[in-house]
Image (cartoon, rainbow, N blue to C red; front, side, top):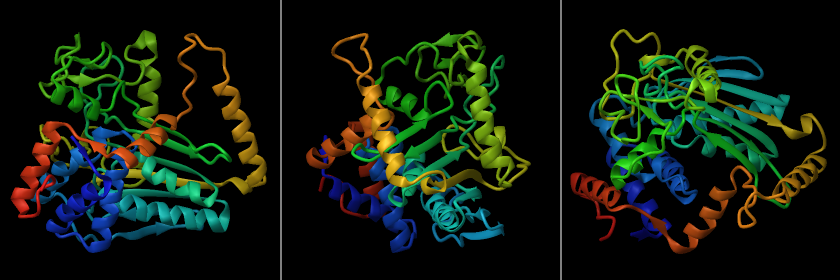
Length: 359
């Protein structure tokens, strides 16, 4: 089923208002989720809406947070999200990073006491309109086993960089530091299809293609899959994200990160406060004139797009290109939702007494 963008925005806004969000926060949170769906990241769009409601029902999400700066220098800050929606807290922090970058060349903000912040690209892309390079990372539900372990100690811990270009769309490097994002497992579960080899382990450490293995006590693998294929590098990237997001900010880290997934409960004796993020921005003109940089970016992109092909039908895909193309298509044709996602959204409509998505 395809839903027009505006209808999906109206529905999502209604749900956020129903749990007590202000108008502004409901609009912003809606924009983060619908932008994810527009970009083709279906795992992090409105399919996650019921998860935020669940956090609110469990008293883990504050719909009216007092977001504030608790530590600050000229180019850095730490923000306390007061258990708010990460969809709202992270943009607040990114705006601070952008203002610091505007004044001093770069700005970096650590965030604690937050919740799931949607796609990292949404926050990092805020830098593009200011001719800046954007950066955003977050720690997440502990579902990933470090190399040589079967114990779930890390999240999928995405990392995102965004780079402005001239005649091309921005380059957007947005990826999980696990072999796959958990949302892709959820999509496979909804479709009842196996996942590729190298994504997950059973509880006793055996490789499997069962998309339900993690919910049954297994674990996701780091980026690289196995040690011989570079999983220690994925572990290192994930550790970096966790330290920047959690240890540096005063948020939780490792297995203590409060989970977004429904099949895990927060661990007791948490060392920090909520989920952690880390965002930043750098002015391009702090290094060279913007026009020169963008011209070089266009030259870089053109060269890679003209690379010799293994298959004549498939050229090099520039990071962010599929998401840009998906956005153009879905704005025109509507956003596709699976039957199970529609079912979950209609359940929310019934719960809150708002107009059904398809009504």
